[in-house]
Length: 533
Image (cartoon, rainbow, N blue to C red; front, side, top):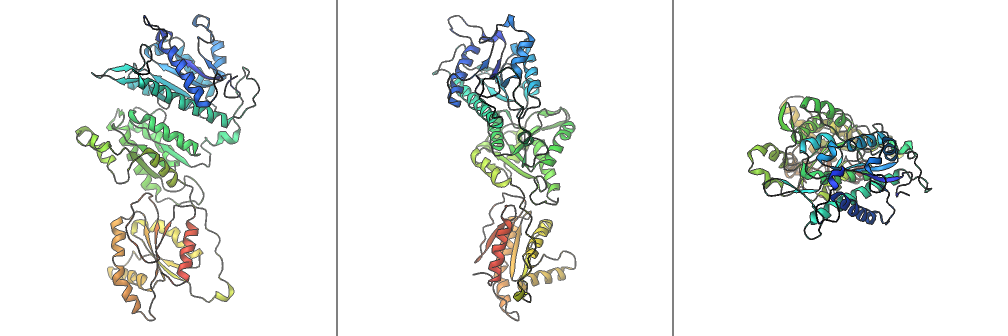
């Protein structure tokens, strides 16, 4: 009985017989050693020794007995597929067909892209690996030797002292295969009756919908990365899926830039965020562009983000607001790129102010903090109590730069719903009219909100530096105006640097948070109590 209910086999091991040949004086072939090591590690991962069911020819059928119907029947009741990629695999009359049959069997099942595990011996050119298995999980069982040649790990037989890299690779494969089996088990908690040879029970429609384009889940476009960051990218993908994000990606990028943009743009248009890991390579080249895939992905995301920032946010609806752009690099990446002339475009991208440099775990947590559902719609406007119907509505000046006025429109409405009288700076008019309006806002208002969105930190700091000259003038008004309540309201984009300013009683309101209305209500209550304390 398989570990995964409803399946006859937990995984199918596909390999070319020629790759399991035994060298003189060696007890087992490389494939046999891999299967035994993987069985031990995977059993430890799931905590159940001897409960994994694996299909491979030494456990069931010899090669000359294999017939198509038996193989296809087994693959229809197999959860995951592990293949050992070598020239022998590609030349085999059976291995590519086994892969095609498995893909066909799981085509309509969830998580079909994450159920194929590629053990790469480093003997097939990188371009061919990407062409055949881009989008599938790949594990490097080789290391680069002196002279640039790939050296197979654990050959001719594994040795714990001589080949620690081999055991690390097996552990990674076992850990992620075990995680996938657990995820599938959670999606399809079939009965624990003995497995039969019928196809596995279908995933409930509600669960399958969580991975479909119509899902209401938050959606992340996960960019392709350089080869050395594939394991980290896989970690991010699993983290996103475990936190109920829908992950989009271009599984088989087109050969031309124009073709790739046709693939990627519709996905980015429906995404809430673009997530990219930056490494030591600009990515594969296009036939019609000298810029690599990594650079082109970033450029397209920034281009679409600029357009999406102006789009109307629909409260509580994913994909309706601005496209968040989140990029990461390791802290030691820049020195590796700085002195390489051919990588200067990548260097400039990686040193950008918005790129997060630090531990990957912190970056994953930042994704979760940043990519959230838009706040719910504000409550209906409540009339003032009858005994306060004649009370003056607080006057609130929203000091926003021209770039942020579209975002400030939402803040205007929220404040109006809280029985305030908000207004923004005048943009049309003579310089003298604009200056008078600005002075009136700063001198007459009960509350000042500085909108911190697209504008620079330096702009915000410059506005605060005017307060020492404004506040004394307020006391000269007739009647004298008390010190205002002050707030900074944060909008798009997220992840801006702290402005490094403060004011007595100042509050910070984050419009990107789900409780933005509550934060604003608290500030308005302070405003009604007489401003700053």
